[in-house]
Length: 173
Image (cartoon, rainbow, N blue to C red):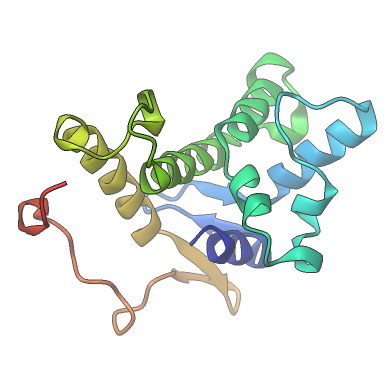
């Protein structure tokens, strides 16, 4: 899931949300460039291997580290704290990265003693898990990509997954 999403994001360079906000790959590139230039990391693991992913496209950890809250925090800090021009308008990208990170954390949770976002799926965390997965579902289904110089829905009707409006039909977690 993460590798496919990273590949689509990096290849298309830009997604558009349902409400018209732009999710741009250039912010990931700008963050890496800033970190390389300064010789410091802003609390994340983003490196050139994450940006030039085609050389190592089978490595899941590169996609997971790209879609991490630490990358989102660094972008947000560059925009709001440092007020760097190249990060102005990155809020949609930050939200996208955080949403993907939260969904991934929920889907890979398996430690019975995990806390917070990495808590296992069980009856007491069902509402939190459903909320996170519904947010991710809504965001991902609503994305549009650039195709032939116009924005088109990223999921076409013949490829669309069935609607998950009613989570009550799903097996108990």
